[in-house]
Image (cartoon, rainbow, N blue to C red):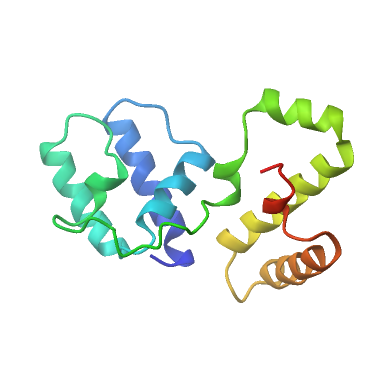
Length: 150
């Protein structure tokens, strides 16, 4: 799937949530599903979702939205999850912020930038701005994954 498909993908998950009488998935859940299915075309996901409506009893897991026989093993396992999916629960974040507010603010900004890069259209000014700010951030502070915070 490609970034322009994200809204249609989100709506597909929202429709399934309503049909299976489940809460509409929050942003981080949608991003985890997106990450798990990023190598499958939106058309294929929609076909699998339609089949799941006929046969499934519960809200589909990402593996149930893949074409049959496609295990997804061709996706590199070492790729990191999207930044929002890596965020810790609120209590842990508050504790970190209390210990080192500057680092917590930097981590929060990094997550915001990564989210913008993941969801913005490549030709948008927001994408260009987030890309340049990300490059400057890495130059100034290094990669946050090696701070021991994320």
